[in-house]
Image 1: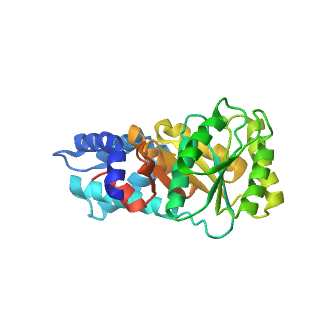
Image 2: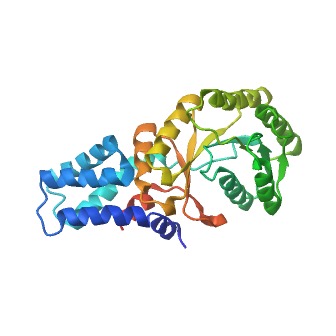
Image 3: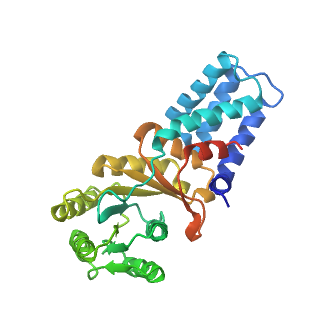
Length: 302
């Protein structure tokens, strides 16, 4: 499938909910202030959030006042255009050629699909003929290293690891040393899937960043948070907490195909303005795709 077909399929539940609500509001009726209030409620229900929903619907309402929105089709087209405008600054491709090794620190709470995402990213990089190394910095969760090693075995990637319970920062340091010594192009550091509310665990992630920087001053070059689309507004709270503590450089969204809450990406773009690097639209290895604002916005109403 093309990118648009994948993103359209991934957003099918979100689109179905949103379109059903909007069609019920405007079908055979004249657009007025009350209709726009109801549309705003429908947008909020797609997990867009109050602030962002107000922003979007206000922009569409301005078009209506100018006589540009008269029909249901006009309304959907205007919504799509405003969503694209909101998302476009977050469409920033991940460029890994600036440093060697290019160190990517992967973050995310338990259950978001972080380790699987690491494997999918590695496959994408391998297609670009990059030499990959994994650093197993999640030394606390049972079987975390083993899970990473299973993926590494399938991909033909080496893993730098320590024994269970070791200092994650020490693993990150050794992985950075190894990456430099072996001529690795991209080092992917897997970390513990900690709850964003635990301050001491955020400090652990900060320590990893500091230790890596001792060996390579510009690293990590990317600090990426993996969020689960099915978490909706909770994913936004996670992103804000991680960004405040660790200064994120990008977001990867997983499980977009399993939720009607795909609108949660909009407040991330609106309030955090973070690059959305990739979106996951299925379980297959090739279902992690680069984020594109126009296709995403169109797929919400297509």
